[in-house]
Length: 74
Image 1: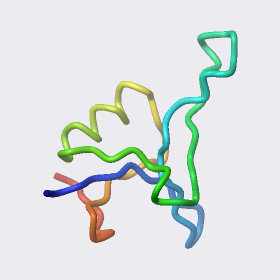
Image 2: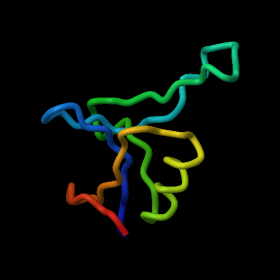
Image 3: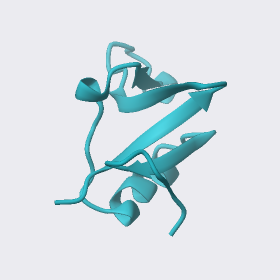
């Protein structure tokens, strides 16, 4: 079963999207949370599902990769 992840890359370090910071009481200031660990990352079933999240959450400098670490640009 294919798996897709949203990542951001700072130099050689990949960080995996793991959700939103919901501790803020101000709705406009909800920030994305990235983790260095793959096990904390959110897994998506398709490229389009992951890409929808990037657009919906206005994530900047983010990419979608598959379970083999290959960049997807479908």
